[in-house]
Length: 380
Image 1 (cartoon, rainbow, N blue to C red):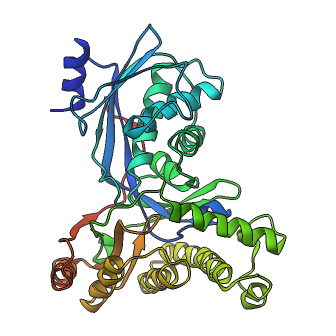
Image 2: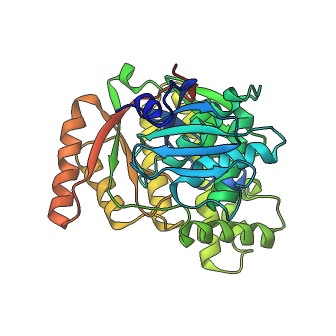
Image 3: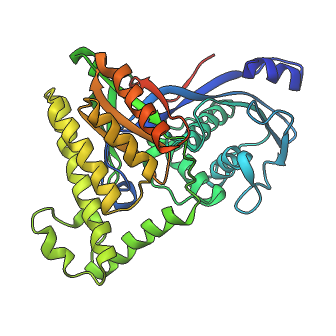
């Protein structure tokens, strides 16, 4: 059943609207966002939808099609850090963030259909938060731009959910446009729509879900962020964005441990690769794009140490089958890889990855072609 149908069953009337926000694939630029660097995500067709309507009693009720029977009720004035747990925190956190920002958001009924696979590194959480933020803003007549809603959605994830993520995911979900990647400079939050149309060149972007689940609230993600903060402090810089690529090795020698050197090396080089890929896309240089993607995976595997055996095998198998480039995408420790390949090789690449996983005794991976799609919007 659709969110609208479930909403009618829950409330006895139609919702005031249905809002949607997509998941995203990060083409390149991983763990650079909380270091004031560059990222290059694009929205995908998989999305979260929210059917919603106002309530006059200050009660927020949230129901998910993925959690049937688990109706969560809370006082809008009482939600906040430590007051919301589990899946509903992604929605209730948005209520809190809007109220913290001074907006008079009260009760609402929200029925959620989260169609972005959870734990796959495709920003299922951001898609839920952004759909809820857009719905609540319109229900309460708030004239807030997408950039502001993205900031509040990120605040919900950081402070209520407890995941120390950077600003990329929510901005990708809110601001991406069809047929483009979003070049986001996380220092000044400026954005540029970069053409991304592989089909016009006979290419495709294939995402393969390794089926290894990950969570941003796991300690490993926070450890990487703390390493970057320590390195920044030791170097006396505002952010790792300020480490120059030229003379990088000289800068690394100033750090206290090999681990910090490796972490910084990844951030600095992946930031440079993001700029390279953005410029290559503008001139249609897909060879450079593929090479940079593969180099990025090696950096995440060896320097940032956020890959896993399944993702490494996935990337190797895709390249062995003729893919032009491949890398894990998302926070790491599981989730998906994104593969650039000729469109006529999609089945061959997919089959080779599946055979490699079968030989290794891993769970069967799930490949699917993605297309750069539109960001958050009202559906009806």
